[in-house]
Length: 129
Image 1 (spheres, rainbow, N blue to C red):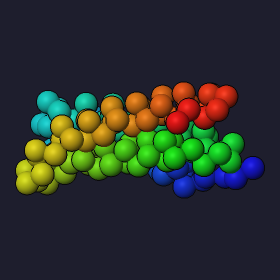
Image 2: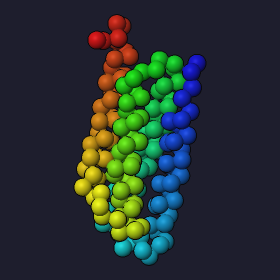
Image 3: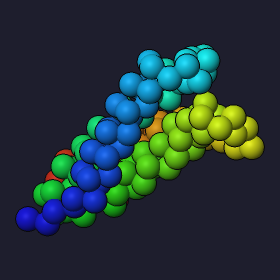
Image 4: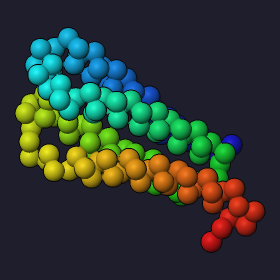
């Protein structure tokens, strides 16, 4: 059985960061001011950290399903463009990449579609073309 611990490790570390951001946003006055968008960033971060772990678990069967690998990449890119972009705004008032936040959300959606597509393809008796 082939292991893909990088997705699981990345997901676990991102989950830890999300918990840290949730705690900081509750206790740090500077982050409390960013409350308009920070809860969304934290919620998406927590969910998609788990999604990375799911990708790692899906790939444990050794199939090397390319759709699931692409899903993991989409989730990771979404974390950067959406969550970390909003964190940078909250922590350092970094506004330069603000326009990429919707692209991050699109990456999250694409990741979930890729998980579904990969499962559908893998479930086919002939591995659908």
